[in-house]
Length: 446
Image (cartoon, rainbow, N blue to C red; front, top):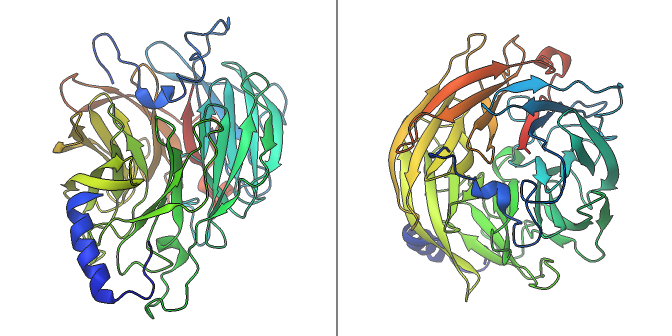
C-alpha cells in the first residue's frame, strides 16, 4: 500500500527490504516485445494476410494537429520516408501537447505513446485528451479508423493484449481507461466501467511531506505483462512525493475479458528508485525497469532493475540492480535477445546491459555515443526494436537548431550488447523551432 498513517520508520524499513527484492542472432531472432499477442491471434508474418509491410512510425505531437510520420523499412533495416498522398492522410484528428510540466526535450515523459497492435497503429493526443487508431494498409499508407476520448486528461502511454487496449492518462493524479480494438477494422470502442484512478491524491494521516513537481511525480508507462495476467503502471514517487521512492501499480486482469480489475496492488520499490520511468520484459517475463538520477540524492547515475512477479500475492520481488556509470538521464528501455538497451538524454548515449533468463544483470556498456553536432545522436528519447532485431532510436535534437532524426542500429555482435549505427534519417521531421515546447515523440515498429 501507499504511505498513510503508518510511521516514517515503517517506510524506511520497507524501502530497505524492497531494495533487495520487487537482436540480432544468426539467423535473426524474433523480438519478443513485438509478439506479445501471439496467443490471441496470428502474428502479421504468420497470418493469411497478403501484406508484406515493414514500417516504422513516429509522431509530430504538434499542438495544432498531431501527425504520424511513416517510413518503409527494407530488409537491411534502413528507412525511407513514406509521404502521404494527401495532407490529411496521416493526421490523428487530435492535438499534441506536453504532459504536465514536461518540455520539448521530453514532452510526454513516457514510453509507448505510439504502438503497433497487430495490423493497427494507435497514438495518443496529449493536447486533446484523445487517442487515434489507424489501419496499416501498406508500407506507404495508413487509414484513420477511430478518434476516441481517452477517459481522462493528458494521455501519454498505451498497451494492448488480445484485442483490449488501455491508455494511461497522466493528469489529475492519473487514471487508466480500456477500449476494445477490432483486429480487422482497427476501430476502437470505449469499455464501460473500465476507468480506474491511480490513487495519487493525499489521504488523511499521510506524512506531511512537500509535493514534488509533476515532472518528478507523474505516471510514466502502462503495459500488460506478456502473459496478460497483470497490467502494470510505473509512477515516479508515491502520492506526489519522492521521499520514499517510486511505485509500480499492479492491476489483476480478468483471464476471460482481459479487463483490469479494481483494487490494484501498490508495490513500493524502495528508495533506490524514486523515479521509476519505463520498463520492458525479458524472454522469461522478468520486469526490466530503468530509473534516472540513481538513488535518493537525485544526482547519481541511472540504474536498471529487474523484478519477478509474485503471482499468488500480485506483488513483485526484486532480482537484481545494476548502475549505469555516468548515465544520469536514462529513462527509456527496450529488451532484445539477452540485452536491455536504455537511452540517456543527458549524455546523448545508449547503454546496453546483459540480462540472463533469470533476470540477473551484468556487463553494462556504452553501446552508442553521440554529441550535440548535426547527424550525431542528440537528446535520444524513445527506442524500439523490429522483429528482426534492428534498433530504432528517436533523436529529438532538442534545444538545438537541428532537425530531429531516427538513428538505426544493428547488433554488432550476437554475444554482447554492442551496436553498429547503419543509418540516420531526418526526412519528414520538423525542427523544434517549428514545434516549440512540444516536440516529436514515440517510436513504433511494424
